[in-house]
Structures are given as C-alpha cells and as structure tokens.
Length: 500
Length: 112
Image 1 (cartoon, chains in turn brown, orange):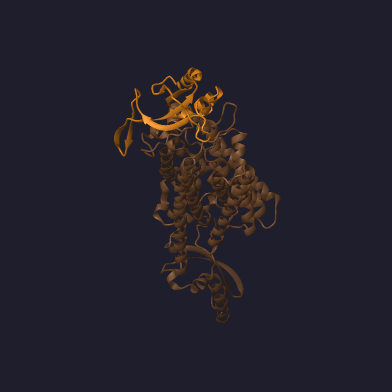
Image 2: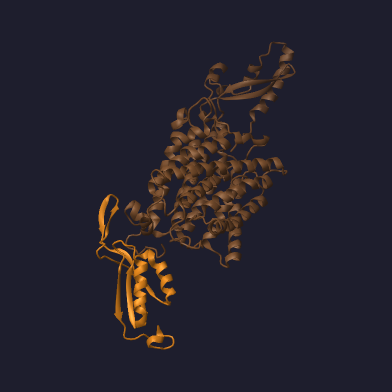
C-alpha cells in the first residue's frame, strides 16, 4: 500500500516564482521566500491564517488526517536567481479534497468487499464438511468476525500500527478525525480474514469455547504482531521487516501477512487437535469424508473471488488509476490457478475434481497478493498457474504423507501458496532478479512461519490443557450442531452421515 | 433363508460393512430411519425456544442370508454396534420364503 500523488502546484510555484524573482531583481527590494511561495497559492488555501497558526493544526501523522486538516509542502522558489526550498503550510485544494474523499470511498468499498469474504469462507467451509456440523461452522464464522472486530479494535490495531507516541487502543484519538476510520475498517476485515482461515483446518471437531478463545488471541495479538513487522509504517508504526537487507520484505496485499499466517496457524491447530474420527484408517490410509453441499462450497468460492477484488485493489487505500490493473492481475491469477488445479487433478486422478478446482483458483489469488501491484500479465498468469498445480499436490502430500487432517485444504491454499506467492515476487515482481530480494522474501516467509506456527502451537496447547480444544468422541459422532448448539441445520431431513 | 434387520447408530455403518464382508456377507440394503426406544429423544433449541426431538436418526440394515450364516451375522452385528450406551439399537431375525434375482430369474439360495 502506498500513496502517490501528482502535484501540479509545485511546478506552478517554480515557474511563477522565477518570474517574481526577476521582478524583484529589478526592484531590488528585500524578498521573503515564504511570501513568494505563498503568493502563488490561491489565498483561500490559507483561510486568512498565518503559517504558524496553520502549522499548529497539522495532524500528528497520516492517521489523523482529514479533509479539513492542513498539509505541509516543500516548494522551491527562485530568490534573486538562487533556488530556495521553502516549507509551506496550507489547506487542501478542492481537487485534493476530492482525491481524499475518493481514497475514503474506495477504501470503504474495498473493505466491504473483503467483509463479504467472511460469507465466502463460511459457505466454502460448510459445503466441504458434513451436514451434522453446519450450524457449528456458521457460528464459528459469525463469531470470528464479531470477536475479531472487537479484539482488533481494542488491542490489535494498536499493536499493528501505533507509533511510539500515540495510543491506538479502541481507535485512540484517530476517532476525532476521518482517515482512521476507512483505514481501520480495511485492516479490521483483514485481521478477521486471518482468523477465519484457521477455522477450516480445525473444522468438525473443535469445541466452540476453545474456538472463541483462539479467535481472540489471533486478532488481538498473533496477526497484529506480524502485521506490525511487515506493514507498521502504513500508519504510524515501523516494522523491522520493512527495511530487511536494505531492500525490505515485500508483501503488497498479504500473501504472507494474512494468508500464510492463517495457514500456519491452521497447521498448528490441526496438529494439536488431531484428525477427525474416521479420517485415517488404522494403517494410516486417509479416507474421504465428503462435504455435504458442493454447490454451496463453489458459490462460497465465487464469493471469495469477488471479495478478492477488494482485498488486492483496495490495498492501495488510494483512489487512483492503478486499481483496475491490480484487479485484472488478481483475476488472471485466479483463473490461471483454476486451470492449473484442474489440469493437475485431471491428470493425477483422471477426473476434474470440483473441490480441487475451487481450491486452485483460491490458491492463485492467494499467491498473487504479494506482487499484484507490480507483476506483469505473464507473471500473474505463471504465479497463478503454479499455485493451482502446487495446491493439488500440497493437499495430497499433507493428507497422505504428513497424515494431517485439514478438512477444507486451508493449510495448502493459504499457507503453502501464500509462501509460493511471496517467493514469486523475487522472480516476477522486480525488474531485475536480485538474490538479496529473494533472501529478504525467504526471511519474511521463515519469520512468518516460525511466528505463526510457534505461537499457534503454544496457543492451541494452552487451550487444550485449560478449557479444552476438542469435543468428546460421542459428540463428534453425533455432530457438533446438536452437541454444541442444541439444534440441527436441516431439521426434518435425514442428514446424519453414514460415515463417522 | 433369513432376513436380518438391524437398527444401528449411523456412524457404525462403515465399520459394520467391513466386518460383515469379512465373514462373507457381500450385499446389504440400508435405509436412514428415525425412531425411538428406551433412548427417547433429546432437547433442541430454536431461537430461544426449547423443543423435544423424539425420533432419533438411525440406520436400518437389511440382509438376507442362508440359515446357517445367520447366527454368525447376528453375532458380528452385535459386537460391532455395541458401544455399551443406551441407543445402540436392535436386531431382528425373520424367516424368508424365497428370493429372486431379477436379471437372471434365479431363485432361492443362489439368488442372494
């Protein structure tokens, strides 16, 4: 996310001040550079106030900016033939106010789109799992957004974006100005996305209270800490990964920061909680526990695809001409991911499997997040295609070789393909390949894995030995809907699966 | 010939199929049914209102086998379906007059 602006006024200042300078030479009067600089701005940009008065109104940082708050601008004036840099404090022009409102509008729309990904995740996860757990899955997805919002508001946002001086707990003093709101909303839906990714990996066997507990910790602590390392400077913070090896660890929209962190947390959760009853035969052979509503899961996948048009293009938090490019790259990678996955699974299993294809297009879009703003068309295609193939073999490897039960494939889609996308930046995101950039990306991925998997293990083990992480065997067999929530998702239908 | 009807817990189906095929029973019919015996039902809640669910989902297994096999089959079903808890189900054994394989017209023992 970066803010770029085209200034037309500084050029004008330079031109006009040159003219003024010439006059002044002729008149041989004393020239005050500030006055020269001010004189080329329309008077209403100063609202009749002195520079000192306006300077006092400057926002503490970008987080507290507003359409009514002044800006600081350095202009070059020509004084008696010598160029001099002058700092001017002034209010925004009408065009700049419109640009600012555009930033707010686009960031909000993008946040709304990312929000709808919650629905996508809920549908995808419910569709890929059994009917006896559908209420539980819906409840988890409702609660991780509710809990995520409040936890991120209360603690997470501060950890991720606060500078040394100002507190951002409960939004802090950004609540007095405008920009904190769209920025917070966009970051909040990101944090909730990380929590909701984990849900799929531990589906169909997790105690509801255990789930609530880990959602709080992820949104209040685990996600924001890594986020502060990689993205802190988007507001007032500064992250050590941002300057890594002089080139910085680069993750534009969160292949690692959001997706891999979620995926590695899910890996830790799935390991600690263990596989569902009946997932592995006594000799370790994995068995399919088919999802109960694949059309529902596919629609969930499409909803996620739609949400990604906010997730990636919104990450500029800027209303500018580049957002369509980012949307197109996102779309190319998603489509290529779907193609990669269908080709891989068709060749491997002799059938074009729907579940893998959905995971394929999701994997493509997970992978493109890192480099989406700088990648070429071909680069986006390759990143997506590779992710689509990778996700198929990753799912098979995790299930058959590692014997880990990941009901929806989120470790592969988000963890593995997030890491792939982050590496891919070094090959497709920079103009000239540099080993330093590759190392910076690898370090970022490694730190992300160690942080998320490490804290994840501690978190899930702590829950396991305190409030409990897993439901009883009898409850798991009967379904979590009745056991945890006292109801059925499809009352009146015989939904009790004939598999355990 | 005998017909064995067994009402069992749904999650036992997979294991049941495996164990029965081990003793040579390679065909069966399955229905999802609801009912209650001593287990009765359970309470559910819907938007704050509590209600009683009397009929609990079960699976009904139907197997037609030769007389001499029936004892072994009943024994297997009994072992697999037993969890020791109320609601494990019941087994009924009924006499069968004849059986006909529709495709070939065979009847009697060779039809099953």
